[in-house]
Picture 1 (cartoon, rainbow, N blue to C red):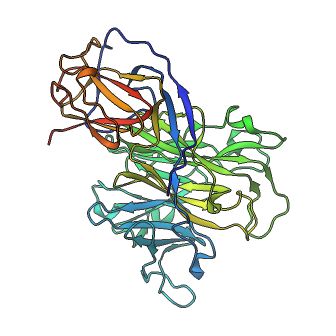
Picture 2 (picture 1 turned 180 degrees about the vertical axis):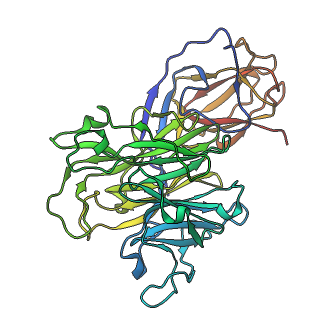
Picture 3 (picture 1 turned 135 degrees about the vertical axis):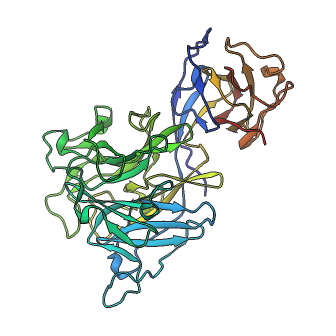
Length: 478
């Protein structure tokens, strides 16, 4: 499996800061990515590159059982137990929530849970019936162990909720009544561990075939809750704009956002948005065929607090359609959050071989897996001209500087600077051991030592040629 190397580029201008800002950036051991400019004070001869995911040769889950009715969908729920390594998946099929397990995340088994009868037998993996578009969220730090697993159950105009202690046996919130008297079909869920709030990333309105306003299109909205029962009023976050619609070539075409997600990653929040390029609507269609047609792919979004979000520029897909046939037309929806598996990022998604409105058959709806290297969504790339990027002044508790970079065709050095952007004696670029290999954990060493200062401001200046700089973090000394 080789990653797709199609990338998008953003050039930087360089202007050194002569004085530190009034306050320094706090970094506490989390990965610091270069997806936005928050930690960048200056740069030159670098391009920001967004990396497309690598894919497997085939989907990881196909409809095989009669109760799945020929289609399987993922709307949010995949979890991996960090201690045992067991993967768990909650997927949608034929108006039911079904359950699967895997030891490796690729080959999945369907345990017989014995909860619901289908065709005279309880030998199946059905957890809930008469539900659609359900996302399962695992609340790792829930104070009530009976509600560790939570679910939002979509409909055209509201959401219901459910909870479980084990992810198998479920009870409904509000006796099955509405949790949200708004929203339409699609949602993912995350939790802000700093505030304890739940965040639901939802589609706010049901779409119309001939929309007259944004309230009749698929868009992105956010609602929050402290108890998963009472939710805040909707806040609109993303609507399609003229940049999204630059591809249009015929009247009636438009861009909409099928769904979206948000999750904490390193020192910030990241997310995905599924971009629907609606090429037309179908007036005559077969049974189960969707009326809205067009391809859907996935773009990256970013935030520093989970509430205020920004698009990347240019708006290029990080999970594009193809090149394999199983997702050549549509990437319908994504998991709540990616999983960290070893030194990789894994994201599960619903894959369709045709555009959204394709007839069944040949339309085939499956669940697939996308992968990146750790912290590998974006990098700062230098080519043959030497590149440099300097961070804003930072304060940490001290420790080792670990750098995620591919310098297998080039080299990287780092200078440690004081608050006035002057190299600290013994920690200048000339004092740094050169990096000329590919690793997600390069340990940076200087003649003056291998620790950054604790409790006082410093900055980092990276010098690189012909390579990619993905991230860095300050790790506590072992």
